[in-house]
Image 1 (cartoon, helix red, strand yellow):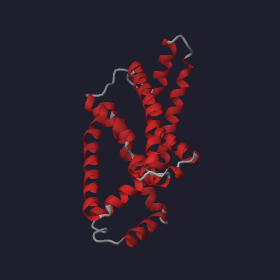
Image 2 (cartoon, helix red, strand yellow):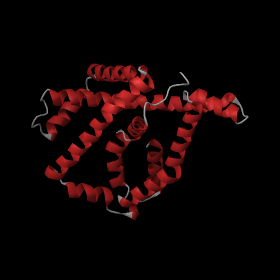
Image 3 (cartoon, helix red, strand yellow):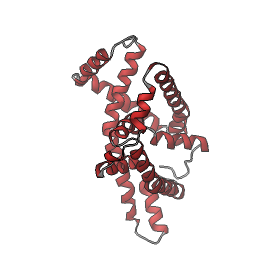
Image 4 (tube, helix red, strand yellow):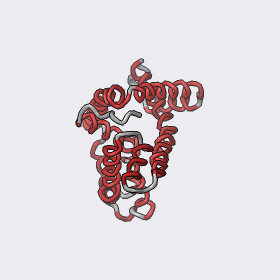
Length: 229
């Protein structure tokens, strides 16, 4: 990887960093684990983990990236040499890449499901569909490995084409387009739930404080989610 590649602007970097954090973990998983582990009490522990662990790790990653201006392996090797230590610190970067690959293994499957939902929505199959109908369609998708493989492969090809474009022309241009779309979709969902759903019940489920549910498992889950975020 070239050592001279940089983000085309600060705003693009912020969007990319936000996109890497605000994923399925926060949109999909966070609401139900919050309600399950004590609502507001869980949120307090989660925010503490973000403040004490997540933010320092993020700052460290950004500083390594700025200093190394390369991929994780070479950046960590450079930092090791600059500190008068072994270049074998590059192995830490390799572990980070491996972790990303492992996350991609299940993210790509779920993203394939999402592409199927997009196609079904555009085709009008979900127009006025009931919850039972949508659940049945999802069960049919899960029972069809070939269709899942098609959507999974399509997502992987889209991802590979974006990454192949590099930091500026690939990732940078894609986040400039996709992140505003994501925020727009979230606002639309928020507005829809406010007008047509039980918005207050959702708020109570997520944020009513119940310290009796805040056990050791909840703390570990909050810490793990902070790392994932």
